[in-house]
View 1 (cartoon, rainbow, N blue to C red):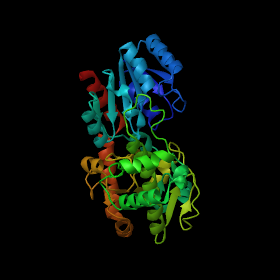
View 2: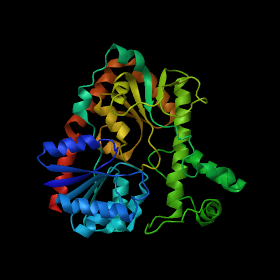
View 3: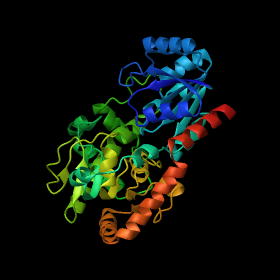
View 4: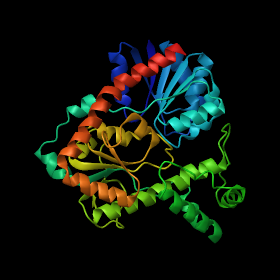
Length: 391
C-alpha cells in the first residue's frame, strides 16, 4: 500500500513512518504545517495536499490528530484518510467534515469515541496510544543520567499556569460568575472518573461568559457548543492546574520531587524544577531514573490513557496515576500500575511504594511487559490498517 504521511512534530511521528515501512508499505512524506492558520479549511493548503495526493498516487493519507483541511482534500480525491487522535480537547473533531465517508478516525479516548458514534460519525474507532518500547529499551541510564535524574517522584508536564485560552479573561468576569466557576473547579478537582464541567454550565452561566468571551465567533462549520468550549479549554485546564500544584506541594513536603516543565514554580519552593526535557532524547532517562512517575491527567481527557502514562510504562517506570476508565480497562490496577483516589491517598501510596522496592519494581515490570506486547507501534499500526481495509 502507498501511504501519504502528514509529517509534523507529533509524538511518535517518526516511529510510525519507520513501522509502516517495516510492514512493507511505501511511505511518502508531506510536510504538514500544523501550527498554521490553514489547518481548518485553508484553500491553499487544501490544493497542495490534493496535488501531492494525486502525484503520489497514494491510496491512504495518514496523520496524527484530525485536520479538516486534510479531510477535504482526501474527500475530493476519493481516497482514505486515517487519523490517530491523541489530543483532548480536539476541537476539529466537531467539524462537519468528520462525517465524510473517507474518514477512518482512531481515538485514544473511549468516551469521545462513543460520543462521536452517537453524533452519527460512521468510521470512528477506539484505539489506545502506543509507546516506542524498542527505542526505550536501548536507552540505558549511565552514571551521569543517574546523577542528573535520580529522584523519588517525577512529573513531566505543564502546570498550566500560563495564560492559556481564556485564562486572561477571567479577571473581567463579574463576581457572581467568578465564585460560581471557582466552586465548579474546586468540586471537580476532588472527583475522579466523572467529568461534570460542561453539564453545570447552564444557559444563564453561558450568557454571562459570552459577555466577556465571545466563544461562538468564527466557528464556521463546527457543531460544538459554547459550554463545551469553555469547559474543555478553560475549566479543565484550571482544574488540572490546581490539582497538579496541590499534589506537588503535598508530595514535596515529604519526598524528593522533580518537575520537568517550562514554567516558573515559585509557589512550589520545595520541588526541584528541572526545566523542559526533550521528549525523544531525555525524557526516557528521566522516567527510568525516578522511583515513582506521576501522571495527573488533563481533565478534558474524559476516559483515555494519556501518552505520558503509556510512555512511563513503556520505559519500565512505576506509574502512579489518577483514575482513568480506559487505563483500568487496558491494565490491571495494583498489578500493572497504581491509581490514587485523592491527594492524601497519593501521598499514602507514595510512602508505601518507596518503602517496598521489590513490589514497586514488580508492578513496573508488569506494566512494561503489557505495553511491550500489546501497546507498541507495530501492533497499533497493524490494527489501524486492518480495520481501515475491512470497513
